[in-house]
Structure formats: C-alpha cells, structure tokens
Amino acid sequence: MTLSDADLADLKTAKQLLEHPGLAAKISSFVGTPVEKGFALLPKQWHSVVNDATQKAIESALNVALWTMDQGEASLTKSTPANWWHKLAAGASGAAGGAFGLAALAVELPVSTTIMLRSIADIARSEGENLKLADARLECVQVLALGGKASSDDAAEVGYFAARAAMASAVSEAAKHLATQGLTQHGAPAIVRLITQVASRFSIVVSEKAAAQAVPVVGAIGGAVINTLFIDHFQDMARGHFIVRRLERAYGASEVKRLYAES
Image 1 (spheres, one colour):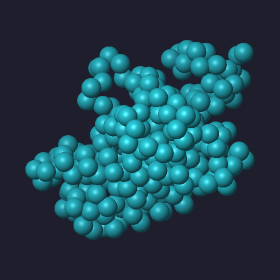
Image 2 (tube, one colour):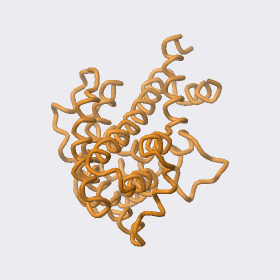
Image 3 (cartoon, one colour):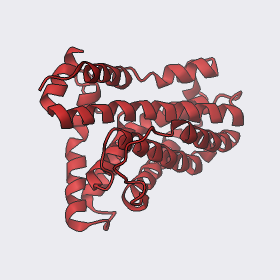
Image 4 (cartoon, helix red, strand yellow):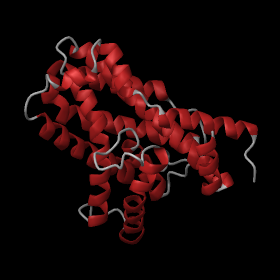
C-alpha cells in the first residue's frame, strides 16, 4: 500500500519531532546560559543523585503503566490528548522541586515522570493504541528512552529507529514475561533489564534538567517552566513515536521505515 498524502505529511511531522528534539536548546534559552555551564554548578555527588532518581522514576512509571492504568484509561476511544492539563501538573511539580534544588530531585522526578507517562498514554490512545495490551503500555514507557542518547550508542547509529532497535530486545522480553507471568515478579531479569535500559537513556535528559535547575536564578518559578519544557519534550517524542506506530500498523514497518529515511 502507498501512504496517502495526509499520512506522508504525518510521517514528516513525526520525523521532525523525533530527530530534532532540542530540549537543551530550549532550556538554555530560558535560563540564559548553556546547559553545559549548569553542570559545573552541580555538587560532586550529582551523578549518583540523578542516577538514583532516574531509576526510581522509571520503576514508578512502570508501576503506573502495568498496575494503575484502569480500563477506563485503556479505552480504545480516540480523543484529543489533554496536553496542557498534564503540562500544568508537571509545572506544579517542578515548582516544588525548583524551590529546593537538586536535593528535591529524588522526590520530584518520580512524580513528574508519572504525570508524563499519563500524558504519553493519552497521546498513544489518540493515535489508536490499545492500552489494554501490556506491550502497548510498555511502548509508553519506552518513549522515556527516546529523548536522550545513551553513552554506549555508536556514533554512526543514532536517531529514532536506532534507539528503537537498541530497546527492542528488552521491550520484547519484558512483554513476553508479562504474558506468561502476569503483573508479578517486578524483580524478574526481563523487567530489570528494561528498567536499566530506559533509565540509561532517560538519565541523559534528566541530567540536562538538573543542570538547568542548578543555576541560582531558577528557583520555584524557573523549576515550573523547566518541568513544562521537560514534559513538552516527551509529549513531542510520544506524538512522533505513536504516529510512526499507527502508520506501521496500516502500511507495514519496512515501508514506513523506508519512507521515513527518504522524507
């Protein structure tokens, strides 16, 4: 099948969102200084704080995805996602975190990540995903891995499809585990591997957020704005990802990937 003009336009939109995320540039513009300078202001233990907070945030997100998305939220009914409501909630969370700096990250990040996941699921549903299925919910969690490049990535293998390929095995194994074991054994190797791989990529973007919040002038109001930019970034990733998945369901993965590369 050949993609319609409307679907080709959607694919181009998805590629623009997925390949040009620009979160660091947006944050730098708001703070008034490059994000890289913010890293110098972070305390010595910031790597440990960010890693711990990221791990907890992904575990919290996975719990939300697998346990607390009820049948109402998993409806097949398409609707316009409530992006602004989720941004307001994330902004409120960021305001609280911004008032206390890096020390609050371990508390604030799981909250804002959970809000983001709800927003990602809302976008997924609007693109026709069946959130009653565990693998569709895992795709929502995987979106958190699409916004940053892992340190282990090959410089020649970057971009959206490379990131998906890197995550494919972990997502597949986790889905198989859930299909056979159900929503139990959170410490199972397949689940741990998924959490670790998502966290390794999500932590890149979290580090940029932490660096921006380390700038002294940020404070509570700045924390709210940065968190709004943070969720906006992942809403874009979600929209692009689930547009691609919708088109793959209609036209086949190989054809969509080919046209994505050509667009």
